[in-house]
Amino acid sequence: MNELIRINSNDMVAVALTPLKAGSVVHVAGTDSSVTLTEDISMGHKVALRNISGGESVIKYGFPIGQATADIKAGSHVHTHNLRTLLSSGLTYTYNPTKPALQAQEHTYFKGYAREDGRAGVRNELWIIPTVGCVNDIAETLARKAQSLLGGGVENVRAFTHPYGCSQLGDDQEHTRTILANFATHPNAGGVLVLGLGCENSGVSEIQKRMGSFDARRTRFLIAQDVEDELETGFHLLEELAGVMRNDVRVSCDSSKLVVGLKCGGSDGLSGITANPTIGGFSDLLISRGGTTILTEVPEMFGAETILMNRCKDKATFEKTVRLINDFKHYFEASGQPVYENPSPGNKAGGITTLEDKALGCTQKSGSATVVDVLNYADKVTVKGLNLLSAPGNDLVASTALAAAGAQIVLFSTGRGTPFGCPVPTVKISSNSALAQHKAKWIDFNAGTLVEGGTLQEKSNELYKFVMEIAEGRKTRNEINGFQGMAIFKTGTTL
Image 1: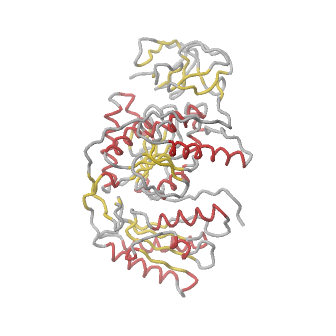
Image 2: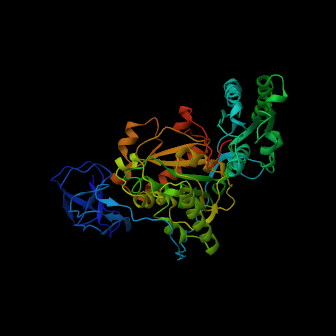
Image 3: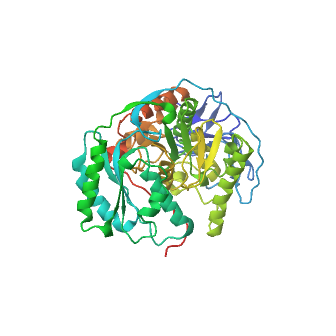
């Protein structure tokens, strides 16, 4: 197999596809050149293809990923010891539209659950949504008891617990209310019990106000303080909901009904070469067939944001993207934290050096589609195509935000591995084959084989087919393992 890959013809570094030994003369895939290694290089890490002078910008993905802090000889390791970020706060942006255009393709179909509001669910689950952390134990007890209701259209029973719903102020309180309301009307839920305590700030009535139009046949509300036995009453309500769901069946649904969230975590040096481009190819395929994808992790766009800005459909969307980026920078600054304190220790161990390096790999998940809309945190998606969503890089918070925005499935690429799942099927896509083999109980799809043969288009088509199988009921590893939870973004004061 290939041992070194140069991503862009202008790159000054190549990435090791396998561990390499000092003294080896290694061919650079896709070129006529080779390089003699001056030191051992771990998989996913960068090798200088030519001598680089201290102070010179280092190019990867065709863009600068930082500045050399010392002279670097050809064949040497390029990483945190000799490369630093070039990013700084206070940037201004200019709209230079590239106007990418995807060619429309014939729509495909999947068997899902048609909902009253015109959306489609890829699951038909019975959800218990606590309005406040005080009733988490009640929710979980009800979920355990309601496992007896499974079958005949009821695919699963879930309680999505969280620590909030009271003692919150301002945006935190409003975000909690809206996120919970979004889940109470999510298309993957065939029945929902909104469970409150009765004295909390974000009580049942506040959640109901924000749910908008909802299917009353499939929704129940319970205030624990108002009944003598909340477990008995709650189980009775769940029985009613299960009765409504019993005869639900999957029907043919157009691919335009699919909304898929795009996320990465525990990335490595191969994430931007295998898994993320494969997800980007999937995104283009779904959008060309009328569907929708959502890209988030705003802090991990820093350093590659202009690529997304220039793909905005118009100046107004560009301005929304500028606000998306700058608002997150101001969030860091207001907390007295460095804007570019990223990547994580795991990212660095996997070969990612600077935030530019990480961001240029991260944004590969967006494919080549036009950016059609920008969503605030807790917003629901309304425009078909590629959307950007305001949320942090934190895996659980960002994935929860994607699901709350309306994603029925989240695609999650990783080079290090992670077991978690959010409230919707969370497809784990490995960037390297070693991880897929080592953590087979975590990983759903191996994109690492891309460097072993085949084309990006073939791998993207393979992922598209796999996602359609998930949409039709195939279980993801997080579902099989029973790992599904939610996390709400907190930025302010707790009373």
